[in-house]
Image (cartoon, rainbow, N blue to C red):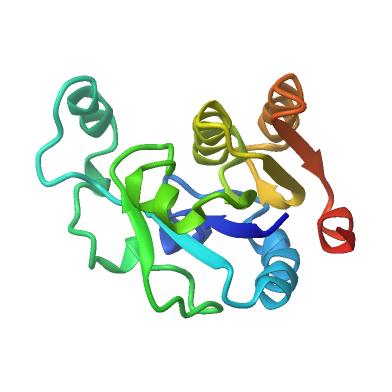
Length: 176
């Protein structure tokens, strides 16, 4: 089965230690993500979390807590880290990146997920894609969470969704 690699939110806002949204193990997942991106070639899509122009509903409270994030999509904090230069990205103002554009990009292929954060955007994307009938594999060592405990818990939760969602190492993903 053909597979698409989705690199979830590998952005400056999660890489920068000065950012309130810093993901502590961000730098550690860049090498395995680079290996996956190289192996998947043209079958890679990068995503970005971006703020809405005007938050609505519960998102209003969210951005009251995180006002620094109310910046336009072209702001430096929302750019993919310089290690990668995607030609385009699938952007979303939601945690989950399974949206019509992503669904079109994936088509009938399987989906491999890597990126940040395991316990938020990766988890939300995995479950929505699985609900849509997509075979999802999460590359456990190519994801990082808000902290180690949250990362491990999110992986455990996703394992509960087997066989729709599988958790594998980068080596296991590349061996398939």
